[in-house]
Structure formats: structure tokens, C-alpha cells
Length: 161
Image (cartoon, rainbow, N blue to C red):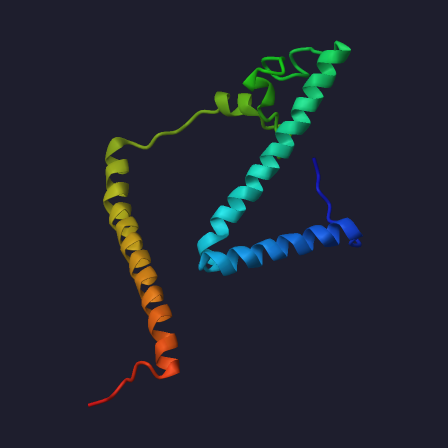
């Protein structure tokens, strides 16, 4: 399934785009969140919609193949039935030559336990520091958002001694 952006906007596309922007504005205005704080949720919803469309297309294909009697195991996936989860597995969507079977056959190299321990000794403190710094950044943002309007309105004065 290839999606290509239309060269010109038709009325339906323009209406959809306007509705999406209006919804984003409402979400921003009513939630009190900044875009970076809700972007993951929005991207998650977009992904779920994408997955739903892909599922619907595959289900329609499986139903059509079942009706026409064209239900070879290869054409319907491993299970070959509409209600079989294996029939909905990707068959190399991004790279047609790479499928689930390719990954199952691939060898996985595991580093020695000592190397894994040394890697953890170095990276775990870094990850913990990242978490602490992200918390500090969030606290600083909240403090800024609380104090800056008060400072600009004159409710708070900063005096040098």
C-alpha cells in the first residue's frame, strides 16, 4: 500500500485538514498541554488508525479469497483463515524479501555475560541521569510557566540587594 500526497487539494481533503487542525487547536486549548507533551499520544492514534486500515484491507482480501475459493495457504498467510491471527501477519510490507520467516531463521549473536555486565555498568547510570534531568526540566518548565506571567504582570518583583 503506497500513499502518495495529492498534487492538488480537493474539497474533501481541505475539509479533513481543517477538521484535523481545529481538533488539534481544541486539544491544545482544553488540555493545557504543550505540543511536545501530547505529540506521542497523537502519533499513537495515527499509528492505530494506520493499523486499523491495514487490518481492514487484509480482512477484505481474506474474505474475498474465501468467497472465490482462492484460499491457498500461501495467499492467505500461514493460517489461511479470516479468524486466524497468522493470516494478518506482515509478509514483508516494507521489504518484500524480508518476512517473519526470515527473522526466525536469522542467527542472533549474544555477547558474553561479562560484556553485558560492563555495558550495563556504564549505561544504567547514564539512563538514570537522563531520567533525573528530564524530571528537573519538567519542574523548571512548570516553575517558569507559573512565575513568568506573574513577573510580566507585576505580581512578582525581583529586587537586587
